[in-house]
Every structure is written in C-alpha cells, then in structure tokens.
Image 1 (tube, helix red, strand yellow):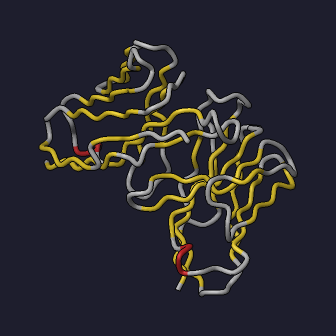
Image 2 (cartoon, each protein chain N blue to C red):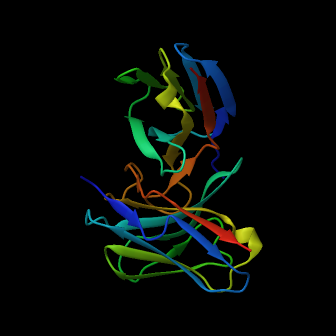
Length: 113
Length: 114
C-alpha cells in the first residue's frame, strides 16, 4: 500500500539554524500536507500543497511539492525554541478510507537555546 | 474557530476494564476519525466514520469499536482494555468527502492501561 518515508527521524539543532526535512513515496500524490505536533497536543496543519512544483511559505516555513509528485520538502529558517515538536508529512489515502490521510512517521525537532 | 474536543486528556485504567473515549466537533464535519499514535510508528487509523451510524475499519481496528449516533460526536470504545493499548489516541474531523481535505485534530487522550 501507500507509504510515506520521512527523514530524518530526529534533529537536534541550535537556535537560529535552518532546518530541512523531507518526505518521499513510491506512489504519486496529488496533495501534500505538513502538520506540526507540539508536545502533548494534537497535530495542526502548517502548509498544504496541491500542485506539482508548488512552493508555499508560511512565515519562516517553506514547503515544496516535488515535480515528480513523489516527494515534498519542508524548510524552517532561523529556528526558535517554539519550533520544537514533531513534524508530519501527509497525503490522501487513495487506496483506503475516503477522507483519510496517510502520515509519515514524523521528524522530531529539538532546538537548543 | 474550529474545535475538536476530546473528553479526557489523561486516563489510567486497569486491564479488562471497558474504556470510552469521547470526541466532539463543532464544525458540522461529515468525516470523523480515531487514530492511535505510538513512538516510531506515527499515526495509525483505527476507525473512520463518514456519516451518522456509518463506520469503516482502519488499519488497526482489532480490540476497538466505535459509535456515531450524532454527527458531532464520535466515540472510541475499548471493550476490554489491555496493556498493549496504552497509547495516545487522537480524534480528527474533516469537511470534505474527497481525499484532499485538511484534518482537524483534538488535543489527544493519553491512555495508560495497567
């Protein structure tokens, strides 16, 4: 079935550094979504991408929908302590329940002040 | 503002107990979901409902059941809790029936089964 491979699994960075993470799949997606989960909370949508090649920003966050439609990238510039959390990529579950999303296993980000 | 509310943030139950996890959304969404989140495994779908009294099994339905008697409320039931059901449970809802919609999540219910 569909799977999303997210990397890296975890990152430990210094405040002010830029962060880059990615998500790949063996199958094509028409939508890519990036969620962030703060410690002890539910995931919240950061960025949604609906078109191959699309580059979208949300403040210090920038995400790209890969041209092959099999990958997506999320970059965070000038990280701050509140960026700590788990970042998930997600795409529609075409082979399963309608309305469901397939999630990557997440990238856990730790920021050292 | 969209809101998905889960009834309990933290629960501790004993093996064999029946557990109810309640989720309410105020956005008139058709779709509601229950996920389980474990370290290193990401989010796994337990059950899904696209309408009142309708339900579909997700990837890991064994040991769980659900109830959707009203559009705004989706309950997850553990008939006989076991220690391997210790986990974070996340409820979500979405508006669109097609596979392009955003999911809105609750804050999660962390269940410990002793």
